[in-house]
Amino acid sequence: MVGIGLGIALSIRADLGLAPWDVFHQGVAERTGLSLGVVIMSVGVAVMLAWIPLRQRAGLGTVINVLVIGPSLDLWLQILPETDVGAARASYLVGSCLTFGFAGGLYIGAALGPGPRDGLMTGLSARGFTVWKVRTVLELSVLLAGWLLGGSVGIGTVVIALSLGPITHVALGWFHIPIDEHIGEVLAE
Image 1 (cartoon, rainbow, N blue to C red):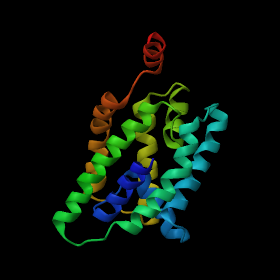
Image 2: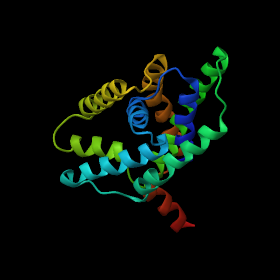
Image 3: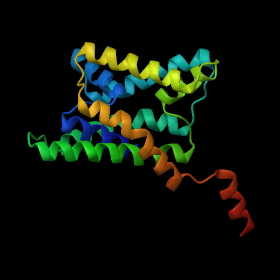
Image 4: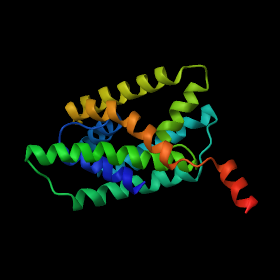
């Protein structure tokens, strides 16, 4: 989760546009004066409340997601310097995509429960909607709302949106250990 906070911080320091949910988080932070980390935590809790009618269940990973990403983001923003240098901003963006993807692979691969936003997507999908349609509607909705609130949209938004899936897919292949197989191997030893 600390890695996801780093990925968000890198995208903010790149100043080329954020991931759709982060555009929304930034827009809310701009309007409320709260830190981005506090907004991410608050939105996570609010989204989890939307799980109730969907009968989604939180896991340990869900709780860690809500409690760790926001504070780690605020910490990373204090550490990472701002820059106006184009090459440095591009490096931040590439670092953001890689960090997001690999941290996401570790997080999802741990299979300890979905993050609040992913749980909303899977909960809605379980009601008969296709995953890609639900994901698209959610992402575009928060992107538009965030942009209207003043969140940062740009080429980085497109780069993150197009690269995150493939990078996470690769990372999942590296980091996911099917629990049943792993337990079977441990018990066989």
